[in-house]
Amino acid sequence: MVASAVSRIRSGGFSPRLAIIWAVLAVLAAAIVLIERGDRAKMETGEDARDERMLLPVSIFDIGAVEVVNKGTLYRFERDAAGVWFYHGIHAEAQAQHEHTVDPKGAARIDKAMTGFGRTRMERQFPLNVQADEFGVTRPEIFIMVYAPGSPQPLARYAVGIVAPDGVSRYVLPVGKANVVTIPDFHIDNLLKLIASFAVAPAPENSAVAPR
Image 1 (tube, rainbow, N blue to C red):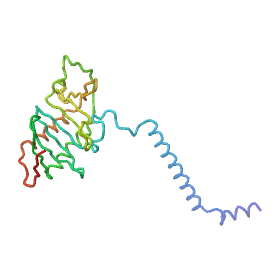
Image 2 (cartoon, rainbow, N blue to C red):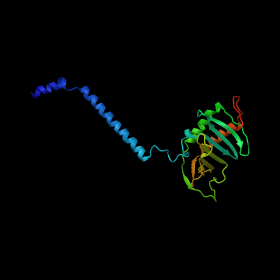
Image 3 (cartoon, rainbow, N blue to C red):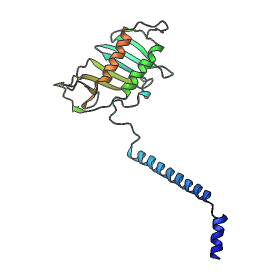
Image 4 (cartoon, rainbow, N blue to C red):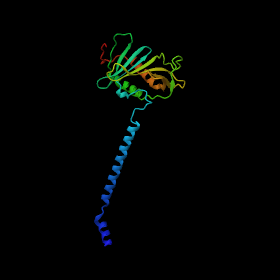
């Protein structure tokens, strides 16, 4: 009788294909459980939060405008309603009006520079000494302000100091913070090259010019 039962299992009572299906389902169920546990762990530990080493407080994709003041002249780059970057214009602080230039050909150039700036990470930190100003941030020649879309008040401001002795880092003071930080100098160099390219380039034929 035992031999007869075993024979029936081998002949039709047991299906290897069915066993494979159940094994696959078990693996999938285990994978789902592990993924859910991982997501919960990230939420509890804050791994999904923004990296605290990033210079900007939010993603560059959440920035609506960036202003760079270089030696007393302000250059503003802004996003339009579609999220495309354009060069807002160049003006001194005392000017009542300035030109507002929309250059479609320059949008990609601005986007590349701003995307790179948005990836800036802070490296070292040093306590600020206002009297000594060894970092060049008390009376900076370069000042950067970033704005949320549609906001008249800066989301963050940065006093850009001198190049560090290593020759590859730049001192920057996030305004309101107690420490000066260093960032890779090429990020500032890229912004200076960007404003220089718009400062010397003639206005394109299809530019829209309007007083502010």
